[in-house]
Image (cartoon, rainbow, N blue to C red; front, side):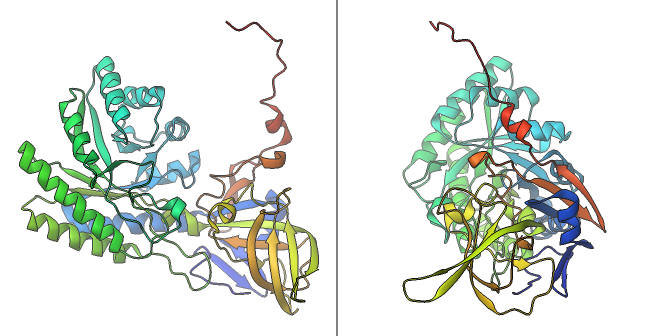
Amino acid sequence: MEFSREIFSTHSAYTKGELSIAGITAATLADEFGTPLFVIDEDDFRTRARAWKSSLERHFGAQAGTVYYAGKAFLCVEVAKWIKEEGLGLDVCTGGELAVALAAGFPLEHIEVHGNNKSEDEIADALDLDVGTIVIDSFHEIERVNRIAGHAGVVAKAYLRLTPGIEAHTHEFIATAHEDVKFGFSIASGAAWKAIEEVEAAANIRLAGFHSHIGSQIFSPDGFEIAATRLIALLAKFRDHYNRELPELDLGGGYGIAYVPGDTTMDPDQILAAIATVVKHQCKEHKLSIPTVSIEPGRALIGPTTTTLYEVGTTKTVTLENGTTRRYVSVDGGMSDNIRPALYDAEYTALLANRPSAATEVDTRIVGKHCESGDIIIRAIYLPNDIDAGDLLAIPATGAYGRSMASNYNHMTRPAVVAVKGGMGRTILRRETEVDLLALDVIETPRKLS
């Protein structure tokens, strides 16, 4: 078992076989809050938020825009408050995420509303609240935003989400900027320019700039550099046609983090230095003013801060066709609190978190308790062969999309989220109960529907 500081949160330690986070042992956290449990290192989150913000300011100076935290990665009221306190913006893509922002008292002018299929109610709410920016994703949305803004007597500030035709080096399902995707307007096909023309003709929309998001878990600046080059070329075409410059450019997120030993989390200075160099060079080539540049890290902020604790329930050893054996270790969660391995073949690592072990490490598969053969958290890892019922396993780097994509499959209750800091711990999202599961059931007398 390997403890990697690149994978675990900053204030984690592994001493004599026992994991601690912010000075609190895994056993203490499990006893106090139960398992499965998401544990967020609050200071680590705040440090990462500050690093991305200061790096954007360092490399873009007066043209530094907003670091929008992508709420889809993980959002609750308390985390939204941290984001507000650290001076970041918030990117939301549903009415539910906007409701969390409102409950946290988030500054409306620092909210960006995203999504490829915003309902009319969601658009109306965003305009009524006067959020900072709406990112328009389709021709239907151009009409909807213009019409709803007109009825409200306002002019909506908007970006157009553009697809620059880049297939980022990532899983197909999370590559979002090549042509065959549901997001945005293609530059290559001419849809982007047609969208520009429609927005410019819309009386109740003010086009402020372009937006692009090329994918997730990206470890090279190349894709971002190409996207910036193509977007700036379009900014120049806009300037030449409309005789004015668009002032803003949002280059999205997708910065990769470490999940297993050997991975390296993207350094904000490395990636933003490369992006800034390209943006400044391309603007000079096209004789454009440098636009205000914003970014949208989500996973890069929350992912490494969080560790999931599980309790082992059962183990078994099976013999494979080639005569070798594999040990199955079943934990008290699974695909309901981490669907990423099933969706994306995502890889994680794990530690025995509550005691030392000198036992031989054997080929192990960590699985959940759901009635699915695909309920696998880690397909292959070497762990001590004496792991048994009652032991604790810790899986790091689960802050992004674990709790956010959690489900009630098999009527499992979703885990609690606790924040730890300086030896102190507190619940910021309580564990669901069976009462919660039953709360939506309705006994209703049938009625005639017209």
